[in-house]
Image 1 (cartoon, rainbow, N blue to C red):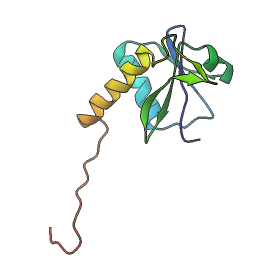
Image 2: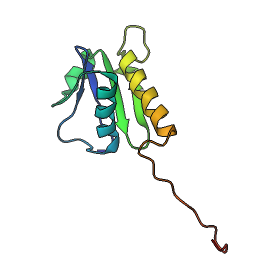
Image 3: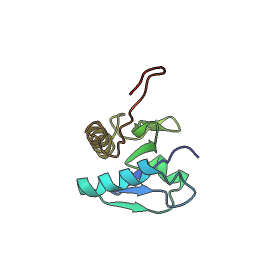
Image 4: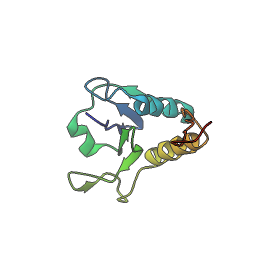
Length: 115
């Protein structure tokens, strides 16, 4: 599996606890929830919950935290856009990444050039 699909249920971010991609973005999302004061729990997330969740988003190393607008063709939020928690997590993730959070600088050498 290359991504996780957390949801917001009763104001709490529910994140898969097994059978998921146990990567840095998943853990970062839990850290960001704590930083924002948003309740989060790792537990089984059933597909049926996604249809009635207040918000749904995806986490993946390549794409970070991405709000989901619809599940099975139905809008997740009443207004048809992304939910407030998903947006906060997405924005804080990128704010911190651009500032170097969990970044490792890489020094590239050009072929044929001496350092």
